[in-house]
Figure 1 (cartoon, helix red, strand yellow):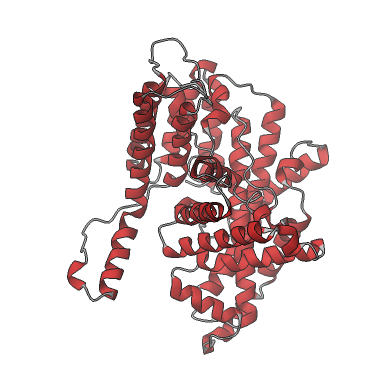
Figure 2 (cartoon, helix red, strand yellow):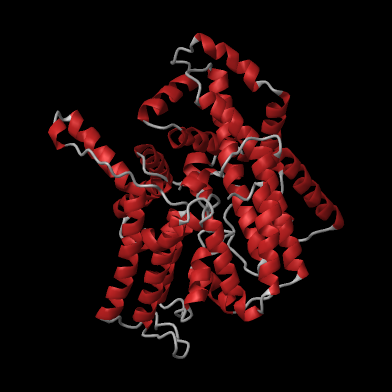
Length: 483
């Protein structure tokens, strides 16, 4: 079930809101948890068992770590500067290890076997390959909820939050359907107080509805048409140079509006339910350096990697060389987090290298003499080129597409049909609208803060237009659902 579907918009969501607000205040976390499991298990109920096991492990580890009990008094946070016992170290290690094991098996088992077999064959060791009958299905959103659940035990260990005694409340935190399968990655310390008690108001609900309408419009009216352009070009056997650049730019817009649109809808649904989720995008294509890009793109992941990986590795506190190694490690792992493919590792490595160069040379020394608009255009170009390995299925396809961009790949005769397919007025207007919104539109976080009658009317119009457009579009799931 996806947000941009009639089933969710006119079936699940109205029923969920009615049940949630009909429940007494003390029972709403239970209702929300059950609704979230229904939402998550809609396509495959077996996924719910994995989610439940992961939740139960982390809840128990949290109790052990803090010495709390389900029936005892509310525990206080640990002293951030105090010593940690062996039991506490084992509890947090068990939580982190179990989460990484689940993520590693379900997401990377097939990838690891395939990579080993490719290496063995390349070395002429065919007898060392594995022929596996087992094929592991990737559960939706496992990369998101394992990181989210891990933040709980780590925050407890660091003394940044108190343990959650009530299992239902903790299960609600892990499973909340607005952000369960594609983020934002919400840390426990950010919503702990809201799980115990939160306020609801028409103002919050109105802002949430506006957020949702804007996100739905981003997805349906901008991301989907741009995705049609990108898929047409990337999936073609070949293309001309102009079409290759058009398709790549369209993919840049698609992935941005697809993911930021989902984030907006998740934030809006959270507000309607009384939760304030963190901002996940801040106009990243307006950045003037790659460093700034990562302060604006997928903020919940980049800050998670910074606080739970980069800083523990030493950050920038152990000299320049160690800093570059840490940056490379974080970005390589961040790339692998996105998908079980060497292409994602390459994408992460590109960004890690660019971040290291900017830190070594200095952002102003690199770009300071360029006018602001040109700097923004340059960073957009660099980020867009880096999307090639992210979108292409393998290294060969990546190299072939880069060849198209510079005219080194011969276009087949069938490529002559591409300009006609891509020149559809609907696709061209959607592409132009995506560009205008990217660089001239007001960020949703700011735009929804003060809802005037005109903005309210516009939000309603966008919602109506997006829901009408859904009838003309084929099913198009969110890109980040596969991560």
